Image (tube, rainbow, N blue to C red; front, side):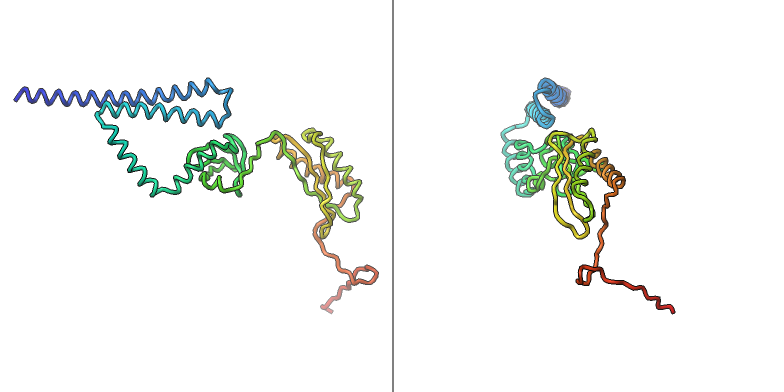
Length: 280
């Protein structure tokens, strides 16, 4: 009886030791995965973009961790062939139950291969504009200008028109300028070009461009296009509109508001309007 108790005790101790060994293996795998993924990413830091560094770090981490997890399961006595078979059946069931997730996963792979944008880029998807803070297998995460967190499924990103605002170092700013019909267009052009010339944030090359858009209901409509570095875009936009208003006021250039004029058709004379006081 005493021998049987000792045998049972020994078996329990052996199981505990095996469990501790497997736990240490898994813990060591986690630490090794962190070290390997971080070390290799830092080694190749200058050769990779921020997007590529993120993918490499995550890929290496999960690869090393899975290898140690398999080793830990073998130490616990699990038959991996049975687990693989069960995992295959489970994956089929999950695939039927989560078609949307599978679509997002495939779309995420396409995004990682195509790379239309990277981490820290400013992008616009539909009506949402923000900075890319994460590109995951299921979704893209943005931080908007008003500091909101937005998660967009990868399938939506693939199906939508995506505009990358920080893809190129410079951007064109199109300012809509309206002046009264009585104004001298040549004088207006000279004033606009002089404003751009005196603004240090406006680029001289490409040159500013003035496009005649047509005759509006109350004004002559112009497009004043200037180029600026992408980091100065908003500052240039605000500053140019403010400067245009000041220069137009100084030069007596009228910026009209919408109004309607009525004519009788006789020699293009305005209709005579007479005020009648009904209180008398």
